[in-house]
Length: 127
Image (cartoon, rainbow, N blue to C red; front, side, top):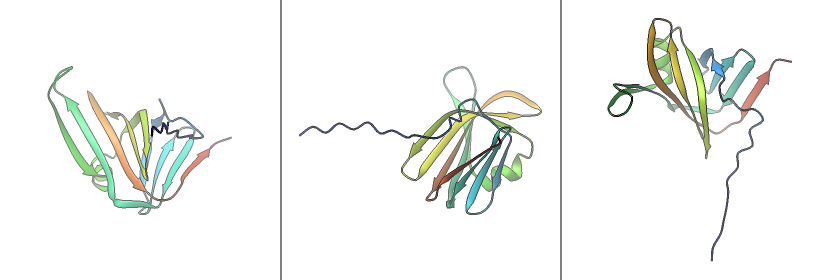
């Protein structure tokens, strides 16, 4: 027997090329704030929310990186923006990947925000 399946995630909005101006950790939810509105990820398990930062040493090859809790990221980086390039959705998980921009750092920093959640994604757009 052959079964074919093409999973589709039908998000109401694409976050590609959006700039996250702030990330807020509200305990059981995570909020991402954009110029155009916000996204709240509900019923988040704080033990399974992580930020990954990668700095390439050269164009290709070796890199150095850090994995940290969202709480640690927010304590360490007070001023930043996060340009979203890719959004991945799985079973109760999401990953947003892109580039972290820091005010006094011109180097390229790849960033991923990984979230495990059991609630809904709530988009709040300004009219």
